[in-house]
Length: 423
Ligand code: AMP
Ligand code: GLY
Image 1: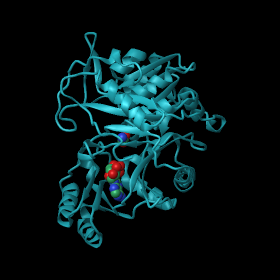
Image 2: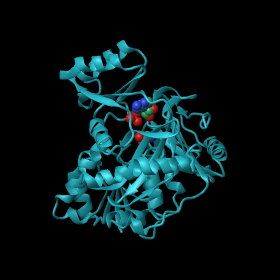
Image 3: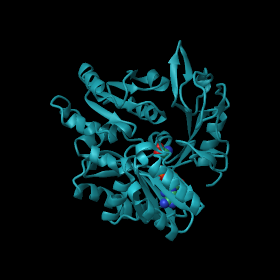
Image 4: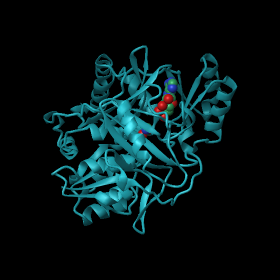
């Protein structure tokens, strides 16, 4: 098969790394990719949201399957774009339909889905600028901390957690009246605060059948001890040590099964990954969000633990035969540590020459924001490299990642040195 993968992060390098190991994958294109995918596949300078250019590429290169990494093309409806086109409709797209992608594209849609299918989640209400006063009253009836969520996509920045009522009211007005997060915050979901520990679970579905992938936990804050600004994710660990078989069973019965059944019941076409963000309160799981793609950097630990052929899995998704595949998971723990550009997640510089990658032997260096330039690898984003290692437990895996990070260098590089402190 000739496959096209859309995206350019560490997630996409990890997916590409796994796909090229499959005997089913004759040729892999990545649009636009990074220096990591450049070394193992063919990068094409096409944006994942430029459907017209993607169509040209698919025709020119006789692509047999499209795998979508990030959420934007899914929320914009790439699945439906292919389905509605006479030539493209024979080519499977791994990802949900536009309606399915609303689970990530609209917090309100996700909350309505959760409620309708009786899936445990935090109590909520949504407001627009016309109902701002009602929003204030709703906040007054709640207890701190206050959770405000922009309805639409806001690059992971649309959630505010505030301790002070006046501040919560101020931010609610700011989101609704001043479009703090642009059009994404023209509607705001106010949610009950759940006090517990976070866990992410990943499911691959063909719409009828599903496979539960390994659990993972990411570290969102830039600073050690989980302090400072939120980022896309600074590290990840899989499996999550506190995810006991009893808890996993609850998650499967109370969350995963009703989610897949709900998609069916609502006639939502969904052939792809579902990433379910959970908070565990007194041993009971609650959904805080759906994402319609894999997590980044969670992919960099989940996919390396997958022993099963990923392309065979995608083919089974396309053919609705996921029930015929047996999932094999590496028992070892995997961890990944992100190396970022100094200043991230605020302003940072690009174009720094990266050295030492060739000296790393017992970890996998996944590229995120990198590009090839004059035979060198240079930084090209906030998150630059993800160093993944295996170990008999997460401590051993983390140690190996840190040892190998010492062999890597670029000007301004930064990473958290405390990963695993909370486990
Ligand atoms: P989200 O973008 O929905 O994942 O939210 C970002 C972060 O906000 C999550 O990773 C949680 O740490 C936190 N969060 C979201 N919803 C809640 C909630 N209802 N209670 C407590 N924390 C929350
Ligand atoms: N690491 C969190 C995410 O991919 O959304």
